[in-house]
Length: 219
Image 1 (cartoon, helix red, strand yellow):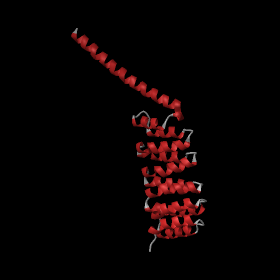
Image 2 (tube, rainbow, N blue to C red):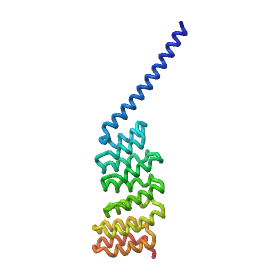
Image 3 (cartoon, helix red, strand yellow):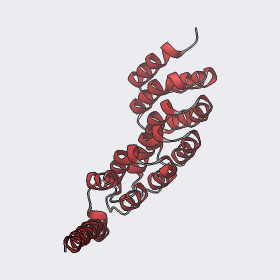
Image 4 (tube, rainbow, N blue to C red):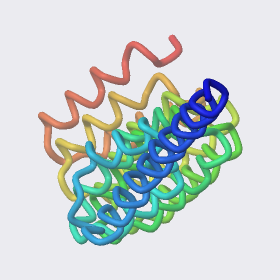
């Protein structure tokens, strides 16, 4: 009789464990279903929490971010999740940033995500920035991108940067860019930057640009 009672209790305990296991699985499936249903309306912080709790993979979260109708807000969400993305999925993160339909969001995401990328992905991010048509946005992206690049990639930035400055309509902004990027330019490009600053018609902008360049010019 004792053996039967012990056998029953062991069986009952096993059933309880199975019940708990399936209940946990059901909760996970339900959570995933809820996330899929609300889709693009889910907040970036909640998606990040879902990744941290292993409800979603980082790859699934990146895909959800990309579906958001507010593509500018999506840029901030991609940056927020960057620290939790596995190295093998960083390419997906770059693709999501590169494919943002909002051009300002795309510029912001590409420049802020660069520290998380490998050298190869940084080169691809730079290429995406170089393809930004708006001169102001491209220059702004270069400001955020450049400090995180290798010396080889920085030399490629310099040419684009000088071209962007010469084509920017607002000379005051051009002066700011010259000052911010001057430390990363080669000697030859610093000379080009100096010429670009001298070409400013607005005397105030010219003065700000030259004063920002001066500490980085060879004597």
